[in-house]
Image (cartoon, rainbow over all chains, first blue to last red; front, side):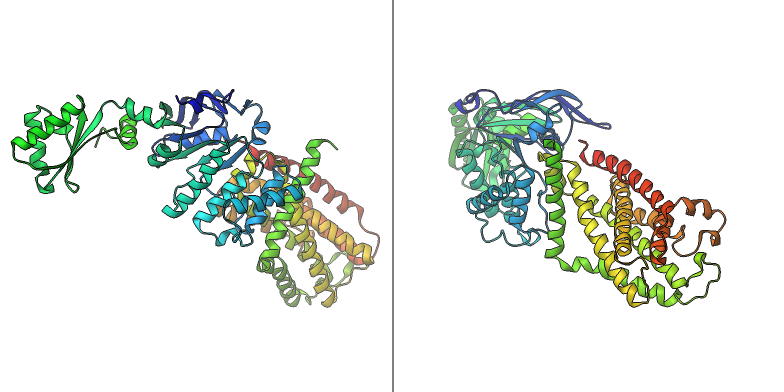
Length: 325
Length: 260
Protein backbone atom coordinates (compact mmCIF):
# COMPACT_ATOMS: atom_id res chain seq x y z
CA UNK A 1 0.00 0.00 0.00
CA UNK A 2 1.15 3.51 -0.71
CA UNK A 3 2.26 6.09 1.83
CA UNK A 4 -1.05 7.96 1.69
CA UNK A 5 -3.15 4.97 2.60
CA UNK A 6 -1.31 4.10 5.78
CA UNK A 7 -0.93 7.69 6.99
CA UNK A 8 -3.40 9.75 8.99
CA UNK A 9 -3.99 7.75 12.18
CA UNK A 10 -7.36 6.03 12.59
CA UNK A 11 -9.14 5.16 9.34
CA UNK A 12 -12.08 7.22 8.03
CA UNK A 13 -14.04 4.07 7.26
CA UNK A 14 -13.58 0.70 8.87
CA UNK A 15 -16.00 -2.01 7.83
CA UNK A 16 -15.85 -5.58 9.13
CA UNK A 17 -18.01 -8.45 7.89
CA UNK A 18 -20.84 -6.30 6.58
CA UNK A 19 -23.83 -8.31 5.36
CA UNK A 20 -27.01 -6.96 3.82
CA UNK A 21 -29.81 -9.03 2.33
CA UNK A 22 -32.88 -7.71 0.53
CA UNK A 23 -35.49 -10.46 0.63
CA UNK A 24 -33.84 -13.25 -1.37
CA UNK A 25 -30.97 -11.17 -2.75
CA UNK A 26 -27.70 -10.93 -0.87
CA UNK A 27 -26.39 -7.48 -1.73
CA UNK A 28 -23.36 -7.57 0.60
CA UNK A 29 -21.85 -10.85 1.70
CA UNK A 30 -19.25 -10.06 4.35
CA UNK A 31 -17.52 -6.87 3.23
CA UNK A 32 -14.29 -5.79 4.90
CA UNK A 33 -13.09 -2.35 3.91
CA UNK A 34 -10.67 0.19 5.33
CA UNK A 35 -10.35 3.71 3.95
CA UNK A 36 -7.47 5.75 5.30
CA UNK A 37 -7.95 9.31 6.47
CA UNK A 38 -7.10 11.87 3.79
CA UNK A 39 -7.17 9.37 0.92
CA UNK A 40 -9.38 8.93 -2.11
CA UNK A 41 -10.70 5.40 -2.36
CA UNK A 42 -12.53 4.05 -5.38
CA UNK A 43 -15.11 1.30 -5.11
CA UNK A 44 -15.21 -0.52 -8.39
CA UNK A 45 -17.62 -3.20 -9.46
CA UNK A 46 -20.06 -4.30 -12.11
CA UNK A 47 -23.74 -3.31 -11.86
CA UNK A 48 -25.40 -5.14 -8.99
CA UNK A 49 -22.14 -5.80 -7.16
CA UNK A 50 -23.43 -3.99 -4.06
CA UNK A 51 -21.65 -0.64 -4.43
CA UNK A 52 -24.70 1.52 -3.79
CA UNK A 53 -25.82 -0.62 -0.86
CA UNK A 54 -22.41 -0.20 0.78
CA UNK A 55 -22.47 3.56 0.18
CA UNK A 56 -25.98 3.79 1.66
CA UNK A 57 -24.91 1.88 4.76
CA UNK A 58 -21.92 4.19 5.23
CA UNK A 59 -24.24 7.21 4.86
CA UNK A 60 -26.66 5.73 7.50
CA UNK A 61 -29.47 5.38 4.94
CA UNK A 62 -29.53 1.60 5.12
CA UNK A 63 -28.91 -0.60 8.16
CA UNK A 64 -26.63 -3.61 7.79
CA UNK A 65 -27.95 -7.05 8.83
CA UNK A 66 -24.59 -8.06 10.30
CA UNK A 67 -21.10 -6.71 10.72
CA UNK A 68 -19.87 -3.36 11.96
CA UNK A 69 -18.97 -0.12 10.22
CA UNK A 70 -17.26 2.78 11.93
CA UNK A 71 -17.20 6.06 10.04
CA UNK A 72 -14.81 8.71 11.39
CA UNK A 73 -14.77 6.74 14.64
CA UNK A 74 -18.56 6.39 15.07
CA UNK A 75 -20.71 3.32 14.64
CA UNK A 76 -23.25 3.80 11.80
CA UNK A 77 -25.79 1.52 13.48
CA UNK A 78 -25.71 2.94 17.02
CA UNK A 79 -24.50 6.51 16.48
CA UNK A 80 -26.03 7.53 13.14
CA UNK A 81 -26.61 11.16 14.21
CA UNK A 82 -22.90 11.61 14.94
CA UNK A 83 -22.01 10.09 11.58
CA UNK A 84 -24.49 12.34 9.74
CA UNK A 85 -23.00 15.41 11.36
CA UNK A 86 -19.61 14.54 9.86
CA UNK A 87 -20.20 13.20 6.36
CA UNK A 88 -21.30 14.60 3.02
CA UNK A 89 -23.24 12.45 0.57
CA UNK A 90 -23.52 12.93 -3.17
CA UNK A 91 -25.89 10.19 -4.19
CA UNK A 92 -26.66 8.73 -7.57
CA UNK A 93 -29.62 11.09 -7.95
CA UNK A 94 -29.12 14.77 -7.18
CA UNK A 95 -30.21 15.60 -3.64
CA UNK A 96 -31.59 18.98 -4.63
CA UNK A 97 -34.95 20.70 -4.70
CA UNK A 98 -35.58 21.19 -8.42
CA UNK A 99 -38.04 24.01 -7.81
CA UNK A 100 -35.64 26.17 -5.84
CA UNK A 101 -32.67 28.16 -7.04
CA UNK A 102 -29.09 26.94 -6.63
CA UNK A 103 -28.34 29.29 -3.77
CA UNK A 104 -31.65 28.47 -2.05
CA UNK A 105 -30.61 24.82 -2.11
CA UNK A 106 -27.14 25.42 -0.74
CA UNK A 107 -28.41 27.66 2.05
CA UNK A 108 -31.28 25.33 2.98
CA UNK A 109 -29.01 22.28 3.11
CA UNK A 110 -26.30 24.19 4.99
CA UNK A 111 -28.76 25.46 7.58
CA UNK A 112 -30.37 22.03 8.03
CA UNK A 113 -26.83 20.74 8.61
CA UNK A 114 -26.46 23.26 11.42
CA UNK A 115 -24.93 26.42 9.90
CA UNK A 116 -26.17 29.82 10.97
CA UNK A 117 -27.87 31.99 8.37
CA UNK A 118 -24.86 34.19 7.69
CA UNK A 119 -22.41 31.29 7.63
CA UNK A 120 -24.67 29.45 5.18
CA UNK A 121 -24.82 32.38 2.75
CA UNK A 122 -21.06 32.92 2.99
CA UNK A 123 -20.23 29.28 2.45
CA UNK A 124 -22.70 29.04 -0.45
CA UNK A 125 -21.04 31.99 -2.18
CA UNK A 126 -17.60 30.50 -1.56
CA UNK A 127 -18.55 27.11 -3.03
CA UNK A 128 -20.34 28.68 -5.99
CA UNK A 129 -17.10 30.51 -6.76
CA UNK A 130 -14.95 27.36 -6.35
CA UNK A 131 -17.16 25.24 -8.58
CA UNK A 132 -17.85 27.87 -11.23
CA UNK A 133 -21.53 28.15 -10.35
CA UNK A 134 -21.85 31.88 -9.76
CA UNK A 135 -23.83 32.40 -12.96
CA UNK A 136 -26.19 29.54 -12.15
CA UNK A 137 -27.05 29.93 -8.46
CA UNK A 138 -29.91 32.35 -9.01
CA UNK A 139 -31.71 30.07 -11.47
CA UNK A 140 -34.04 27.21 -10.55
CA UNK A 141 -32.22 23.87 -10.44
CA UNK A 142 -34.67 22.30 -12.89
CA UNK A 143 -33.19 24.53 -15.62
CA UNK A 144 -29.65 23.19 -15.01
CA UNK A 145 -27.64 20.96 -17.34
CA UNK A 146 -26.45 17.63 -15.96
CA UNK A 147 -22.93 18.88 -15.29
CA UNK A 148 -23.98 22.00 -13.39
CA UNK A 149 -26.51 20.01 -11.38
CA UNK A 150 -23.81 17.54 -10.33
CA UNK A 151 -21.46 20.30 -9.28
CA UNK A 152 -24.18 22.00 -7.27
CA UNK A 153 -25.01 18.65 -5.66
CA UNK A 154 -21.33 18.25 -4.78
CA UNK A 155 -21.21 21.80 -3.39
CA UNK A 156 -24.30 21.02 -1.28
CA UNK A 157 -22.48 18.03 0.23
CA UNK A 158 -19.58 20.28 1.18
CA UNK A 159 -21.51 23.04 2.97
CA UNK A 160 -20.27 21.88 6.39
CA UNK A 161 -16.73 20.78 5.35
CA UNK A 162 -17.38 17.08 6.00
CA UNK A 163 -14.64 14.80 7.30
CA UNK A 164 -15.70 12.21 4.72
CA UNK A 165 -17.31 12.74 1.33
CA UNK A 166 -19.15 9.76 -0.14
CA UNK A 167 -19.96 9.88 -3.85
CA UNK A 168 -22.08 7.32 -5.66
CA UNK A 169 -21.17 7.28 -9.36
CA UNK A 170 -20.58 11.03 -9.48
CA UNK A 171 -19.73 11.16 -13.17
CA UNK A 172 -22.31 8.73 -14.55
CA UNK A 173 -24.35 10.31 -17.30
CA UNK A 174 -22.11 13.35 -17.76
CA UNK A 175 -20.64 14.42 -21.08
CA UNK A 176 -16.82 14.32 -21.30
CA UNK A 177 -16.37 18.05 -20.64
CA UNK A 178 -18.61 17.99 -17.56
CA UNK A 179 -16.81 14.88 -16.35
CA UNK A 180 -13.47 16.69 -16.61
CA UNK A 181 -14.87 19.67 -14.69
CA UNK A 182 -16.20 17.42 -11.95
CA UNK A 183 -12.91 15.61 -11.72
CA UNK A 184 -11.06 18.91 -11.47
CA UNK A 185 -13.34 19.79 -8.53
CA UNK A 186 -12.65 16.44 -6.86
CA UNK A 187 -8.91 16.79 -7.47
CA UNK A 188 -9.04 20.17 -5.71
CA UNK A 189 -10.79 18.60 -2.71
CA UNK A 190 -8.26 15.82 -2.62
CA UNK A 191 -5.42 18.34 -2.60
CA UNK A 192 -7.05 19.94 0.47
CA UNK A 193 -6.96 16.55 2.17
CA UNK A 194 -10.69 15.69 2.06
CA UNK A 195 -11.23 11.97 2.53
CA UNK A 196 -13.38 10.56 -0.27
CA UNK A 197 -14.97 7.27 -1.16
CA UNK A 198 -16.47 7.08 -4.61
CA UNK A 199 -18.04 4.39 -6.69
CA UNK A 200 -17.45 4.42 -10.40
CA UNK A 201 -17.96 2.39 -13.51
CA UNK A 202 -15.10 4.18 -15.20
CA UNK A 203 -11.97 2.20 -14.53
CA UNK A 204 -9.84 4.89 -16.07
CA UNK A 205 -11.00 7.30 -13.38
CA UNK A 206 -10.08 4.95 -10.58
CA UNK A 207 -6.74 4.41 -12.29
CA UNK A 208 -5.95 8.10 -12.57
CA UNK A 209 -7.24 9.49 -9.28
CA UNK A 210 -7.67 6.90 -6.55
CA UNK A 211 -5.07 6.18 -3.87
CA UNK A 212 -6.68 2.80 -3.38
CA UNK A 213 -9.05 0.75 -5.49
CA UNK A 214 -11.42 -1.79 -3.94
CA UNK A 215 -13.04 -4.21 -6.35
CA UNK A 216 -16.50 -5.30 -5.25
CA UNK A 217 -18.05 -8.32 -6.92
CA UNK A 218 -21.22 -10.15 -5.92
CA UNK A 219 -21.24 -8.54 -2.48
CA UNK A 220 -17.60 -9.22 -1.60
CA UNK A 221 -14.39 -7.22 -1.88
CA UNK A 222 -12.35 -9.42 -4.22
CA UNK A 223 -9.25 -7.22 -4.39
CA UNK A 224 -7.86 -4.09 -2.76
CA UNK A 225 -4.76 -2.09 -3.49
CA UNK A 226 -3.38 0.65 -5.66
CA UNK A 227 -4.32 0.55 -9.31
CA UNK A 228 -0.76 -0.61 -10.12
CA UNK A 229 -0.95 -3.42 -7.57
CA UNK A 230 -4.26 -4.62 -8.98
CA UNK A 231 -2.86 -4.67 -12.48
CA UNK A 232 0.25 -6.50 -11.29
CA UNK A 233 -1.74 -9.14 -9.42
CA UNK A 234 -3.40 -10.18 -12.64
CA UNK A 235 -0.02 -11.68 -13.45
CA UNK A 236 2.27 -11.22 -16.38
CA UNK A 237 2.58 -8.26 -18.65
CA UNK A 238 1.05 -8.21 -22.08
CA UNK A 239 3.01 -8.57 -25.31
CA UNK A 240 1.38 -6.64 -28.12
CA UNK A 241 2.21 -6.65 -31.81
CA UNK A 242 0.86 -4.48 -34.58
CA UNK A 243 0.96 -5.79 -38.15
CA UNK A 244 1.67 -3.85 -41.33
CA UNK A 245 -1.49 -5.33 -42.88
CA UNK A 246 -4.56 -5.67 -40.63
CA UNK A 247 -6.08 -8.17 -43.09
CA UNK A 248 -3.64 -10.92 -42.10
CA UNK A 249 -4.49 -10.84 -38.38
CA UNK A 250 -6.26 -14.26 -38.44
CA UNK A 251 -3.37 -15.84 -40.33
CA UNK A 252 -0.89 -14.27 -37.90
CA UNK A 253 -2.82 -15.68 -34.94
CA UNK A 254 -2.65 -19.19 -36.45
CA UNK A 255 1.10 -18.77 -37.07
CA UNK A 256 1.71 -17.74 -33.45
CA UNK A 257 -0.36 -20.63 -32.11
CA UNK A 258 1.52 -23.13 -34.24
CA UNK A 259 5.07 -21.88 -33.81
CA UNK A 260 4.79 -20.99 -30.08
CA UNK A 261 2.65 -24.07 -29.32
CA UNK A 262 -0.15 -22.03 -27.75
CA UNK A 263 -3.89 -22.64 -27.79
CA UNK A 264 -5.43 -20.23 -30.30
CA UNK A 265 -7.81 -18.96 -27.58
CA UNK A 266 -4.94 -17.38 -25.62
CA UNK A 267 -4.15 -15.01 -28.46
CA UNK A 268 -6.27 -11.91 -28.35
CA UNK A 269 -6.85 -10.26 -31.70
CA UNK A 270 -8.09 -6.88 -32.74
CA UNK A 271 -8.54 -7.06 -36.49
CA UNK A 272 -9.57 -3.42 -36.78
CA UNK A 273 -6.35 -2.16 -35.22
CA UNK A 274 -4.31 -4.94 -36.79
CA UNK A 275 -3.17 -6.00 -33.33
CA UNK A 276 -2.47 -9.27 -31.55
CA UNK A 277 -1.67 -9.65 -27.86
CA UNK A 278 -0.94 -12.42 -25.43
CA UNK A 279 0.30 -12.88 -21.86
CA UNK A 280 4.09 -12.39 -21.91
CA UNK A 281 5.04 -15.19 -19.52
CA UNK A 282 8.73 -14.75 -20.33
CA UNK A 283 8.73 -10.98 -20.76
CA UNK A 284 10.80 -9.69 -23.69
CA UNK A 285 11.67 -13.26 -24.72
CA UNK A 286 7.99 -13.88 -25.51
CA UNK A 287 7.88 -10.67 -27.50
CA UNK A 288 10.97 -11.65 -29.52
CA UNK A 289 9.64 -15.17 -30.12
CA UNK A 290 6.42 -13.67 -31.50
CA UNK A 291 8.34 -11.36 -33.85
CA UNK A 292 10.58 -14.17 -35.07
CA UNK A 293 7.65 -16.51 -35.69
CA UNK A 294 5.79 -13.92 -37.74
CA UNK A 295 8.91 -13.00 -39.71
CA UNK A 296 9.47 -16.67 -40.58
CA UNK A 297 6.01 -16.75 -42.20
CA UNK A 298 6.66 -13.46 -43.97
CA UNK A 299 4.17 -11.41 -41.96
CA UNK A 300 5.30 -7.78 -41.60
CA UNK A 301 5.40 -6.29 -38.08
CA UNK A 302 5.08 -2.52 -37.64
CA UNK A 303 5.21 -2.21 -33.86
CA UNK A 304 6.15 -4.29 -30.81
CA UNK A 305 5.38 -3.47 -27.18
CA UNK A 306 5.34 -4.94 -23.72
CA UNK A 307 2.89 -3.32 -21.33
CA UNK A 308 1.14 -3.76 -17.99
CA UNK A 309 -2.39 -5.07 -18.23
CA UNK A 310 -4.99 -2.27 -18.27
CA UNK A 311 -7.26 -1.91 -15.26
CA UNK A 312 -10.03 -3.12 -17.56
CA UNK A 313 -8.19 -6.39 -18.05
CA UNK A 314 -7.44 -6.59 -14.32
CA UNK A 315 -11.07 -5.90 -13.51
CA UNK A 316 -12.35 -8.57 -15.88
CA UNK A 317 -9.85 -11.07 -14.54
CA UNK A 318 -10.70 -10.29 -10.89
CA UNK A 319 -14.47 -10.38 -11.24
CA UNK A 320 -14.49 -13.31 -13.62
CA UNK A 321 -16.81 -11.30 -15.83
CA UNK A 322 -14.56 -11.93 -18.83
CA UNK A 323 -14.47 -15.71 -18.59
CA UNK A 324 -17.52 -16.16 -20.77
CA UNK A 325 -16.24 -13.79 -23.47
CA UNK B 1 -36.00 24.03 25.49
CA UNK B 2 -33.72 21.06 24.91
CA UNK B 3 -31.26 21.00 22.01
CA UNK B 4 -33.44 18.44 20.21
CA UNK B 5 -36.62 20.49 20.42
CA UNK B 6 -34.75 23.65 19.41
CA UNK B 7 -33.47 21.81 16.39
CA UNK B 8 -36.96 20.50 15.63
CA UNK B 9 -38.38 24.02 15.77
CA UNK B 10 -35.60 25.50 13.64
CA UNK B 11 -35.73 22.72 11.03
CA UNK B 12 -39.54 22.90 10.87
CA UNK B 13 -39.34 26.62 10.13
CA UNK B 14 -36.66 25.97 7.48
CA UNK B 15 -38.71 23.23 5.80
CA UNK B 16 -41.90 25.31 5.88
CA UNK B 17 -39.92 28.22 4.44
CA UNK B 18 -38.77 25.94 1.64
CA UNK B 19 -42.39 25.10 0.64
CA UNK B 20 -43.52 28.68 0.78
CA UNK B 21 -40.53 29.80 -1.27
CA UNK B 22 -41.40 27.23 -3.94
CA UNK B 23 -44.89 28.72 -4.07
CA UNK B 24 -43.49 32.22 -4.31
CA UNK B 25 -41.26 31.20 -7.21
CA UNK B 26 -44.13 29.33 -8.92
CA UNK B 27 -47.28 31.34 -8.19
CA UNK B 28 -49.11 29.19 -10.75
CA UNK B 29 -49.17 26.45 -8.11
CA UNK B 30 -51.61 28.49 -6.09
CA UNK B 31 -54.30 28.40 -8.77
CA UNK B 32 -55.46 24.92 -7.89
CA UNK B 33 -55.63 25.24 -4.08
CA UNK B 34 -57.00 28.80 -4.08
CA UNK B 35 -59.19 29.21 -7.17
CA UNK B 36 -60.75 25.77 -7.46
CA UNK B 37 -62.51 25.95 -4.04
CA UNK B 38 -64.07 29.27 -5.03
CA UNK B 39 -65.37 27.79 -8.28
CA UNK B 40 -66.85 24.81 -6.40
CA UNK B 41 -68.45 27.11 -3.84
CA UNK B 42 -70.14 29.19 -6.51
CA UNK B 43 -71.29 26.07 -8.41
CA UNK B 44 -72.68 24.30 -5.32
CA UNK B 45 -74.46 27.39 -4.04
CA UNK B 46 -75.87 28.34 -7.46
CA UNK B 47 -77.19 24.84 -8.15
CA UNK B 48 -78.35 23.79 -4.68
CA UNK B 49 -78.45 26.95 -2.58
CA UNK B 50 -82.05 27.91 -3.29
CA UNK B 51 -83.60 24.46 -2.73
CA UNK B 52 -86.34 24.54 -0.17
CA UNK B 53 -85.71 21.83 2.37
CA UNK B 54 -88.16 21.73 5.22
CA UNK B 55 -86.43 19.40 7.62
CA UNK B 56 -83.23 21.34 8.31
CA UNK B 57 -82.25 21.52 11.97
CA UNK B 58 -82.67 25.10 13.22
CA UNK B 59 -84.92 25.83 10.26
CA UNK B 60 -82.59 28.16 8.30
CA UNK B 61 -82.17 28.21 4.53
CA UNK B 62 -80.31 25.43 2.72
CA UNK B 63 -77.74 27.99 1.60
CA UNK B 64 -76.81 28.69 5.26
CA UNK B 65 -76.72 24.95 5.92
CA UNK B 66 -74.61 24.16 2.86
CA UNK B 67 -71.77 26.71 3.04
CA UNK B 68 -70.09 25.44 6.28
CA UNK B 69 -70.29 21.96 4.72
CA UNK B 70 -68.49 23.17 1.60
CA UNK B 71 -65.77 24.84 3.67
CA UNK B 72 -65.01 21.62 5.57
CA UNK B 73 -65.44 19.40 2.50
CA UNK B 74 -62.91 21.59 0.69
CA UNK B 75 -60.35 21.13 3.50
CA UNK B 76 -60.89 17.36 3.36
CA UNK B 77 -60.31 17.32 -0.40
CA UNK B 78 -57.20 19.52 -0.18
CA UNK B 79 -55.57 17.42 2.55
CA UNK B 80 -54.38 14.50 0.36
CA UNK B 81 -51.98 16.84 -1.46
CA UNK B 82 -49.89 16.86 1.73
CA UNK B 83 -49.33 13.14 1.46
CA UNK B 84 -48.71 13.29 -2.28
CA UNK B 85 -46.10 16.04 -2.09
CA UNK B 86 -44.35 14.27 0.81
CA UNK B 87 -44.25 11.15 -1.31
CA UNK B 88 -42.80 13.06 -4.26
CA UNK B 89 -39.87 14.12 -2.06
CA UNK B 90 -39.46 10.61 -0.73
CA UNK B 91 -38.85 9.12 -4.14
CA UNK B 92 -36.15 11.62 -5.08
CA UNK B 93 -32.49 12.04 -4.20
CA UNK B 94 -33.59 14.88 -1.96
CA UNK B 95 -35.03 12.42 0.58
CA UNK B 96 -31.63 10.71 0.83
CA UNK B 97 -30.05 14.12 1.25
CA UNK B 98 -32.40 15.00 4.13
CA UNK B 99 -31.94 11.58 5.72
CA UNK B 100 -28.16 11.92 5.59
CA UNK B 101 -28.21 15.36 7.22
CA UNK B 102 -28.03 15.80 11.00
CA UNK B 103 -31.47 17.44 10.89
CA UNK B 104 -34.59 16.67 12.86
CA UNK B 105 -36.50 13.93 11.05
CA UNK B 106 -39.91 15.05 12.24
CA UNK B 107 -39.26 18.45 10.64
CA UNK B 108 -39.87 17.03 7.16
CA UNK B 109 -43.52 16.31 8.03
CA UNK B 110 -43.99 19.22 10.45
CA UNK B 111 -42.55 21.74 8.00
CA UNK B 112 -44.90 20.46 5.33
CA UNK B 113 -47.87 20.70 7.72
CA UNK B 114 -46.86 24.21 8.76
CA UNK B 115 -46.80 25.47 5.19
CA UNK B 116 -50.06 23.60 4.45
CA UNK B 117 -51.63 25.34 7.46
CA UNK B 118 -50.98 28.63 5.67
CA UNK B 119 -52.73 27.28 2.55
CA UNK B 120 -55.72 26.01 4.56
CA UNK B 121 -56.03 29.39 6.30
CA UNK B 122 -55.85 31.41 3.08
CA UNK B 123 -58.34 29.05 1.41
CA UNK B 124 -60.80 29.44 4.26
CA UNK B 125 -60.52 33.23 4.35
CA UNK B 126 -61.12 33.38 0.58
CA UNK B 127 -64.11 31.03 0.89
CA UNK B 128 -65.59 33.13 3.70
CA UNK B 129 -65.13 36.28 1.59
CA UNK B 130 -66.86 34.72 -1.41
CA UNK B 131 -69.58 33.25 0.81
CA UNK B 132 -70.28 36.72 2.17
CA UNK B 133 -70.86 37.94 -1.38
CA UNK B 134 -73.32 35.05 -1.75
CA UNK B 135 -75.20 36.28 1.29
CA UNK B 136 -73.60 34.14 4.01
CA UNK B 137 -73.07 35.80 7.39
CA UNK B 138 -71.23 34.51 10.44
CA UNK B 139 -73.47 35.70 13.25
CA UNK B 140 -70.81 35.60 15.95
CA UNK B 141 -68.73 38.35 14.30
CA UNK B 142 -64.96 38.52 14.04
CA UNK B 143 -64.38 36.01 16.82
CA UNK B 144 -66.70 33.64 14.99
CA UNK B 145 -64.82 34.13 11.71
CA UNK B 146 -61.53 33.42 13.50
CA UNK B 147 -63.15 30.32 15.00
CA UNK B 148 -64.16 29.09 11.53
CA UNK B 149 -60.60 29.54 10.24
CA UNK B 150 -58.95 27.86 13.24
CA UNK B 151 -61.28 24.85 13.28
CA UNK B 152 -61.00 24.40 9.51
CA UNK B 153 -57.19 24.56 9.63
CA UNK B 154 -57.00 22.09 12.54
CA UNK B 155 -59.44 19.75 10.79
CA UNK B 156 -57.49 20.05 7.53
CA UNK B 157 -54.16 19.33 9.23
CA UNK B 158 -55.61 16.23 10.92
CA UNK B 159 -56.66 14.77 7.58
CA UNK B 160 -53.40 15.96 5.97
CA UNK B 161 -51.35 14.10 8.60
CA UNK B 162 -53.39 10.95 8.02
CA UNK B 163 -52.84 11.30 4.27
CA UNK B 164 -49.08 11.64 4.84
CA UNK B 165 -49.00 8.36 6.71
CA UNK B 166 -51.18 6.58 4.14
CA UNK B 167 -49.05 7.93 1.28
CA UNK B 168 -45.88 6.58 2.89
CA UNK B 169 -47.61 3.21 3.38
CA UNK B 170 -48.63 3.08 -0.29
CA UNK B 171 -45.15 4.25 -1.40
CA UNK B 172 -45.96 4.51 -5.11
CA UNK B 173 -46.92 8.08 -6.02
CA UNK B 174 -49.27 7.14 -8.84
CA UNK B 175 -51.17 4.61 -6.73
CA UNK B 176 -51.32 7.07 -3.85
CA UNK B 177 -52.87 9.67 -6.11
CA UNK B 178 -55.77 7.34 -6.83
CA UNK B 179 -56.02 5.84 -3.35
CA UNK B 180 -55.84 8.96 -1.16
CA UNK B 181 -58.72 10.92 -2.64
CA UNK B 182 -61.22 8.07 -2.11
CA UNK B 183 -61.34 8.23 1.69
CA UNK B 184 -61.31 12.03 1.46
CA UNK B 185 -64.38 12.02 -0.80
CA UNK B 186 -66.04 9.35 1.36
CA UNK B 187 -65.67 11.25 4.62
CA UNK B 188 -66.82 14.45 2.92
CA UNK B 189 -70.06 12.86 1.71
CA UNK B 190 -70.91 10.38 4.48
CA UNK B 191 -71.39 13.29 6.88
CA UNK B 192 -73.72 16.16 7.62
CA UNK B 193 -71.88 18.40 5.12
CA UNK B 194 -74.67 18.30 2.50
CA UNK B 195 -77.66 16.85 4.34
CA UNK B 196 -78.69 16.40 7.97
CA UNK B 197 -77.54 13.03 9.32
CA UNK B 198 -81.16 11.96 9.82
CA UNK B 199 -81.79 12.25 6.07
CA UNK B 200 -78.90 9.94 5.04
CA UNK B 201 -79.30 6.27 4.18
CA UNK B 202 -79.73 4.19 7.33
CA UNK B 203 -76.38 2.42 7.19
CA UNK B 204 -74.57 5.72 6.71
CA UNK B 205 -75.99 7.37 9.80
CA UNK B 206 -73.75 5.85 12.51
CA UNK B 207 -70.67 6.55 10.34
CA UNK B 208 -71.82 10.09 9.65
CA UNK B 209 -72.42 10.74 13.35
CA UNK B 210 -68.86 9.68 14.26
CA UNK B 211 -67.31 11.49 11.28
CA UNK B 212 -65.01 14.45 12.14
CA UNK B 213 -66.47 16.22 9.08
CA UNK B 214 -69.87 16.18 10.83
CA UNK B 215 -68.36 17.53 14.04
CA UNK B 216 -66.41 20.30 12.30
CA UNK B 217 -69.37 21.28 10.10
CA UNK B 218 -71.69 21.28 13.11
CA UNK B 219 -69.41 23.61 15.02
CA UNK B 220 -69.08 25.98 12.02
CA UNK B 221 -72.89 26.09 11.68
CA UNK B 222 -73.26 26.96 15.34
CA UNK B 223 -70.78 29.84 14.86
CA UNK B 224 -72.66 31.04 11.76
CA UNK B 225 -76.08 30.91 13.40
CA UNK B 226 -75.03 33.57 15.88
CA UNK B 227 -76.19 31.79 19.05
CA UNK B 228 -73.96 30.23 21.71
CA UNK B 229 -71.26 28.12 19.96
CA UNK B 230 -71.97 24.41 20.40
CA UNK B 231 -69.58 22.72 22.81
CA UNK B 232 -70.18 19.07 21.93
CA UNK B 233 -68.96 19.20 18.28
CA UNK B 234 -65.98 21.34 19.37
CA UNK B 235 -64.92 18.69 21.91
CA UNK B 236 -65.47 16.01 19.32
CA UNK B 237 -63.30 17.71 16.72
CA UNK B 238 -60.63 18.37 19.38
CA UNK B 239 -60.54 14.66 20.20
CA UNK B 240 -60.33 13.70 16.54
CA UNK B 241 -57.56 16.22 15.93
CA UNK B 242 -55.53 15.00 18.90
CA UNK B 243 -55.75 11.39 17.75
CA UNK B 244 -55.20 12.05 14.04
CA UNK B 245 -52.31 14.47 14.52
CA UNK B 246 -50.52 12.21 17.01
CA UNK B 247 -51.01 8.63 15.83
CA UNK B 248 -50.61 8.90 12.04
CA UNK B 249 -48.16 11.76 12.67
CA UNK B 250 -45.79 9.63 14.73
CA UNK B 251 -46.21 6.64 12.41
CA UNK B 252 -45.48 8.82 9.36
CA UNK B 253 -42.33 10.33 10.89
CA UNK B 254 -41.10 6.87 11.87
CA UNK B 255 -41.78 5.50 8.45
CA UNK B 256 -40.12 8.42 6.72
CA UNK B 257 -36.98 8.21 8.83
CA UNK B 258 -36.57 4.44 9.02
CA UNK B 259 -33.40 3.15 7.35
CA UNK B 260 -34.18 0.54 4.70
